[in-house]
Image (cartoon, rainbow, N blue to C red):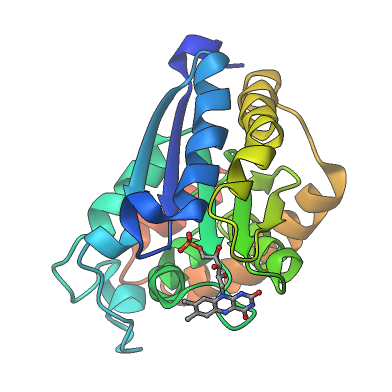
Length: 227
Ligand SMILES: Cc1cc2nc3c(=O)[nH]c(=O)nc-3n(C[C@H](O)[C@H](O)[C@H](O)COP(=O)(O)O)c2cc1C
């Protein structure tokens, strides 16, 4: 059990529009709610970081390291050091933005090795009108895929009203407060835990297949009783 003032929340948002971004504002509201509950927070704009697209070279599986020397690793480190992760994206053609998808694709090895096990996350999206539910559901799936549990997220359809995001401020703050409360209470979402366990059983075959060249991580999985 964590005390609230130890809790660290990091947020990654996928809009390229900087301070004009409504997704960024929504994520900021979530973080403000988390801060009200005593958490330390950090927000990172993926667009400002250098993140190469995955080339499927398989180096991560073979070595545990990506061939690209860019900002990806430090972002994953930040996620691993956090207790809660907020993912936010605008809806682009009924999906996440390219910035977010390029980042998510680079997470394949982190997913195989379940690096966010025991953590919590939530997802938010903004859209003109369509795709909000699908994007939140996809980002929640990514959070589960990494081994973390996800709180029910939120999306906001704003059309062309740049100010409408403020109408969702309280709901987003509440989401941030709920995220911190779930972390400090160790809330269990049984259906998600079942899915995470199923995923882990599948990924155990990958960790086992890599065991010769990634012995330490394999031994850790054995120690945890996952293999
Ligand atoms: C490339 C692109 C694709 C978009 N695709 C959709 C879409 O499929 N459905 C929709 O309702 N809005 C779509 N939009 C509108 C954005 O989702 C919406 O304006 C969002 O709030 C922008 O977020 P931001 O202010 O954080 O950048 C699209 C916008 C762009 C730039």
